[in-house]
Image 1 (tube, rainbow, N blue to C red):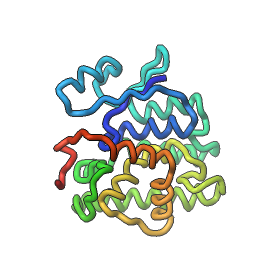
Image 2: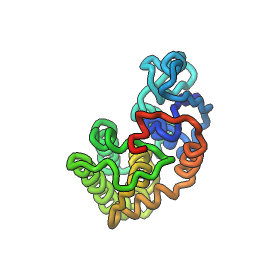
Image 3: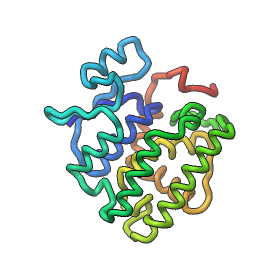
Image 4: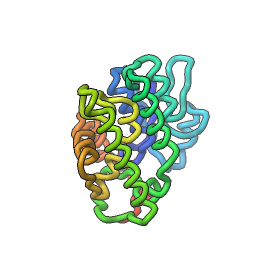
Amino acid sequence: MKLIIGNKNYSSWSLRPWLAARACGAHFEEIRIPLHTPTTRERILKHSPSGKVPCLIDHAVTVWDSLAICEYLAEKYPQLWPTDPTARAVARSVSAEMHSSFQDLRQKMPMNIRKDYTGQGHTPEVDANIARIEAIWNDCRERFGKKSGAGPYLFGAFTAADAMFAPVCFRFKTYGIQPQGAAGEYLAMMLAHPLMQEWAAAGAAETESIAAEDLYG
């Protein structure tokens, strides 16, 4: 398999399937294409029909959406979703909500691992997005994570749902957001995950800068 991704400092969409694939033990070649350069789209189109990252290529199969890639991986590695049908349905629901929602947070608080933007980006709409994310984390931990006894993540063991929320964890760190209770414990656990730290170290080491993503200097 090959996984085409963008800059690790900025590309939240790339992080999700990379983390899911690494967490489930999938073996793949990583192809990183820096974003926002004159040749970016041309280079991505050699792999992805959408002209966007991420894109997974597995022999004759091409999958070019982060959640679709997670679903594809889950067919090979079923542990990427909870085994309990109710938990699995909720995990898919919150993953889809993360995939399609929280536009204000995305626009005002883009993922930027290298920066410390504590206190920046807040609007009433962004704060409402943050409150909803914290509510999801608290609810999933209380209803499923703690009951399962299998681990410290949203549904106990690490799943695709955790991969989908991983960029938000980096955002919360960058913008100094500190949830309380189960949500705060979950955030700390995600930021301490070895694969999250590996990604963060690689992002911090990148030299490219994208002015559109460096919103606050």
